[in-house]
View 1 (cartoon, rainbow, N blue to C red):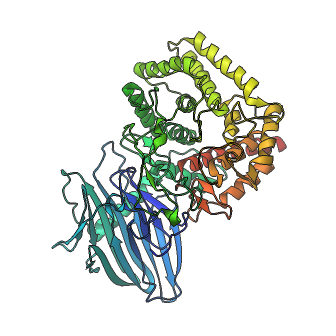
View 2: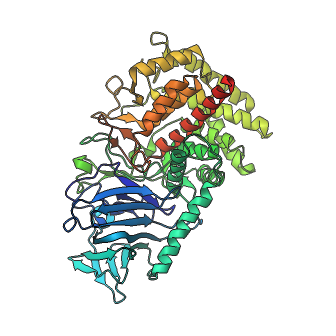
View 3: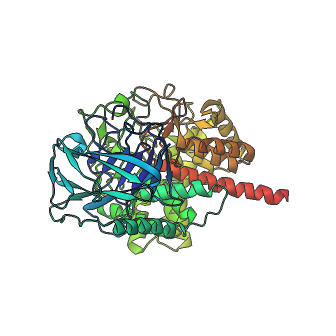
Length: 612
C-alpha cells in the first residue's frame, strides 16, 4: 500500500452486522469484526503500512495495460471488480451473505469469488491482517486442510482458498499466485471468529460458494420488493436503501452513521471522527426514509431498540436519551487517539470512540417523535408511557442552550434548529395522543409547543438578514434549517421561508453544493475547514422542490448525482475539486438523497398533471 486510494474508490459489502470496503484495485482496506464498532482487522485506509489489508487482483507485474471497473450486481450488495487486459478478462465478486436473524454472531465470512471469462489472467493474493487497529501482533499457522489461521487477541481470521491456490507464508502474512483461463473459477474465503465458544468454520466447496452467492442475490432482491418507490431515480434510490440496510445492525435494529472512523473532512486536518455508532438523530431519519419507501420491519426493530434505551435510562449525559450509543445500546463511547496510526493521507489524529456522546442536543427528541409518528404506531402501553415521560421532561428542559446538530465543540448556544425540533416533538406527541386516545398532559405540551413557536419567530428570525439564523446570538445562516418546511413549522412558500432560502442560496450554496455554515463567522472550536455537506445539498434540493422551484431543484439534484462514486455511494462531504471527504458511506447522505428524490418526484408529477 504505497499510496492511499481515494475515499470514493470503494464499494461496500456486509452481512447486516459488519461491513467491509473493497477498493477498485481489489483491496479490502477496511473491515471490523464481529461488529461495525469492533476493532479493525484491515485498516490500511488509516495507515497504509500498519493498518493491514487483503488484496486479490491481477498481477500488474506480469500483465500490462490492465483496465479495472467495479460495479454492483443490480439491486444487490454483491460487488464485482473486473480486470480487463489484452490477454484476458477476469473478475472478483466480493460478498457477505446477510444474516437477518436477531442473534449477534461471533463469526463473519467474506467470500471473494474469482473467474476468468476470456483468455487467461494471473492473479496475486496478499493477506496482511492487523488486529486491534494494528496494535496487536498475530501468529500464522498453515493447517493440514490447506487453509491458514491468523490468530490475534480474542479474534481469529481463517483464510481458505480453492485447491488451485497454493498459499505461502510471508513472515506472519500470506501470499499466493494463481492463473485462471476462460471458464475457470477459484475463491478465497475470509472468516473472522471471535469468542471462546466459536468453533472453527467448516471448509467451503466451490458449489457452496456458488450457492452462497445466489442466496445473497436472492436476499437483496426479495428485500427490495417491499419498496414502493417507482419514481425517476429508481437505481439511485434502491442503492441508497441498500446502503442504509447494510448500515443497520440486524440483531438490534440500530442503524449506524457510517461504516468508517477517522476519514477526514479536510485532508491533513483534525476533523476526523468515529461514526460507527447509532446517533438517535441519524437513525431516526434513516428509519423515516425507509418507512417512506415502504420498509416497515426496520421501523419496528428501531422502535423496540429505542424503547429499550428509554426504559434503561442508562446515559452518561443524565438526559432521558443520549445522542448516540453503541449498536447494542451501550452508552459508553470513550474517545481515544490511536497515536500509532498516521491517518488517511496523514490526516491526524485518528480517533476511536466519540466524546460527543455526552453532549446535550435537544433536537434528537423531535427526530424520534417524527419517526414514530411517520410509522403511525406508538407501540404498546409501556412504549407510550416511556415516550410521554420524555415529553413531560422536555416541557421543562426545552429552553436550554445545547451543542446543536453539528456537535460543535465551541460551547453551547440557543440553536434555532434545536428549538425547531423540540417544537416537532411536542407537535407530533400531541397529534399521536389525540389520534390514538393516549393519556397525556396535553395542556402542558400545547403550552410548550406554542412557547417554542413564539420564541423561534421572535428570536430565531433576523430582520436584517430576512432569514432564520443559526442561533439567537448570531446572524450566521445554518443549512440544518432547510428542514423547517418538511417539519411543518412553516409553509414551503411562506415569504419568510423563501427569503431564508434565497439567503442560503447566496451564502451557503456553491454550484448546488451546500455548506453547513460558515465556521469563520461562527467558530465551532476546531481548526481547519471542511467541504460542502452532502446531507445539506440534498436537503436544499428538497426545499427547492417544495418551494415550487422545480427546474432549479432538478438541475441541482442531477448535479449532485454526478458526485456519487462509481457504484452510487456517497461520503459525508464534497471537497473543492469534487472529491469525496469524511466517513464513507454515510447514512445521512443516502437518507437525504431518498427524501429529495421522493419530494422532487411528487412535485414534478403534480406540475405535469397541472400542465396536462
